[in-house]
Length: 310
Image (cartoon, rainbow, N blue to C red; front, side, top):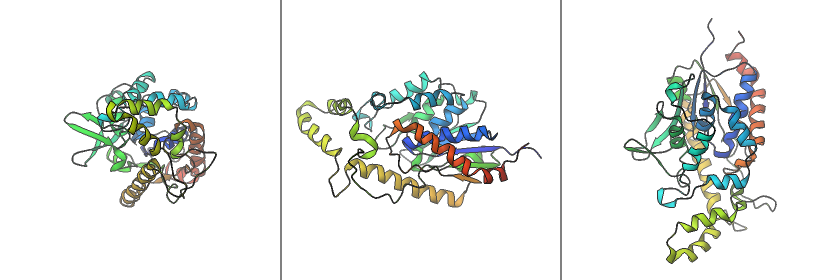
């Protein structure tokens, strides 16, 4: 019998998305090579790196990432529908050579986005791969929407956080899915003296806040600076603004994922243990990648049932 076509559905999850690198590396080590890759949000970034043969370059970048470099990628522009413009992220993709067209990739690929006007799920399967990724990662309230023809597109996690359906539609016989949000719901809000709130956002350089405040009209800039600082704080007995935003996104994507996968379950579901990594803790790539390796190793008996050795 011919080997089944393997589809890999890489889910959304912001900084937890670095674990996708570990998942792919562990699968390759076991001889399980995806024939089709579909990604949502950060899953689209890692998926694009894989299909353009730049996964090793992305891993090297991720493991060396510091908070200062993260701040440099956050090109603030509050007039564009989000706190972050996203141009620097596209420039990073170019630097890593993740900038071909999807049609030229040997492995079929789709990035999942959402039409901001209609709410429709959009599968980006052609055109510049960096622009497809840019649309897929446009997390509402944080990264501004991306223009695509006559549509404005936002994060695909709003409609399909783990794109199993796209893998099947592209011809996968066996779908391996990676859910990054499966173990994060139910975490208690608590203030820890040794760790900053909202995945390290308060630990950022003042440069980020200064950029944000510079976008505000001069007449109200002094008042806005006070408000901005308060938004980053959490009261001892209640979550702060960004805590609410981050956990609301987590809850939303978890609920949508459960609903979608109930009707279209994958053959193998991988759930890295990532509750300890915050939404914006991109500097913790090594930990996330290690969790990706670990979850594949634990699921190997199930994987072997569906993907037999030649």
